[in-house]
Image 1 (tube, rainbow over the protein chains, first blue to last red):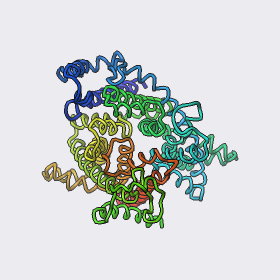
Image 2: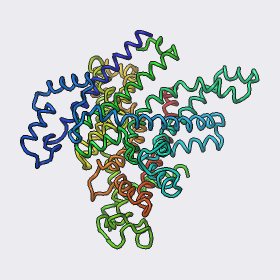
Image 3: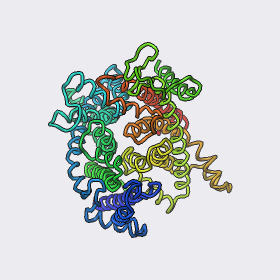
Image 4: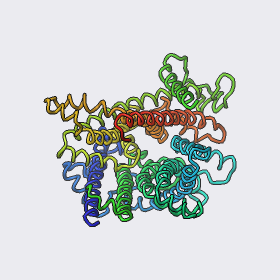
Length: 309
Length: 270
């Protein structure tokens, strides 16, 4: 386990270094002079020079990169140009909202995907199966920047059950979470179904049935537990899509999280904030994947002892 | 029915996109008395917030999404396949470096990197293509790498090597034809992903510039008038949804079909 752990950690560190490099280089991709774009053409020459120095853009690229890395190690993400506040402070302010949205969306996705997937697998090739998989197909194909407005139209404007946008009490999280969770639920329910179908053909399921165990016990206790392993890996991978989807969903609902901050920062050309948001979301994703892999290896000894690495 | 309906929808999409120039469209003509007018006679999808015909803008939006998806999927497929095939076949340090690069790009979830890139590069259809290709090539690189790794020790490749074929010739004649099926399936789903991504970027205001129409930008405009003019959100949304759903349905069938063929040929699935 220990060598697997080191191997995975070293790999993750390399990836993190790569991600940091790309995020650092982003600001150098801006066509033209980034300082001019950020301040506008009417800015005084002294202001431009001050911003250039404060961003470190007057130094050679290698020195800038080392400064950036050094800052990151001390959790110094720079200062917002637009709001003139430390970027780390802004991120901390917005983090709880995104965390809440992601958690509730995950819950929604699991609550939809598990019953649908199990139902489709147990009643294979029946109308139950095809309608569950039909739902999954619809869920994969509907973009969340359309599902969101549709939900607002029906549940906020026509029925008046939930607030249109913003974050006011628990009711306001329902529609964004539904929007974000549906896509994930669609992917997961397919995975649950195929994983369940595989497990249901195993010998131990036949044994359990032969012992005369009731159906629900065989399905939930014997089959589901074994079927969940690949689902957990997929969940880790799909969490990234969830985080990226949060950028769009938060914009639809004006949900004050990291995603909305990213878009606001892009619109106000506050590039240090854009960099920090992209970095934070990507690092969350890398960490979740690392934890998923390690948890998986802990649960399933075949992986860490496989010697395939 | 299960094939014809999606095929019909995709043909309509193609027809709208390719025929847009031939049709007498007026997507930018403003008819002030008709602002936010609901669908009715003379304008079967109604008018938008500036009094422009929604149906005409929908056709131009089809053009935008087809143009972007053809470019992005084409460029990504080319770059990713070349990169993945070359590094995997070469092996050694180049391959290690390539895996590291691919892993790094995959560490950016979904279209996040494309959002940041499009935001920094500024709006415009060419920047959308650049941003989405920068994210899109990785998938094809990973897929073709996995394919080459399993193919490069096959006997026919070894035979070609011992006959002194050049690397380029082996890649082109002995590897790529066998990799085509999974790459085509991936590219099919890739088109659906790019249609959503382009509309997503335009929805965020990072895509095409007004007055050029995009389905995503139309939804964005529509969300401000949902109570008075829900047709502004419904029409472009249905268009995106129908196109993406059709591609996914046909992609599934294509995958099943090619899978069976591959299984029949080699005797083992996947």
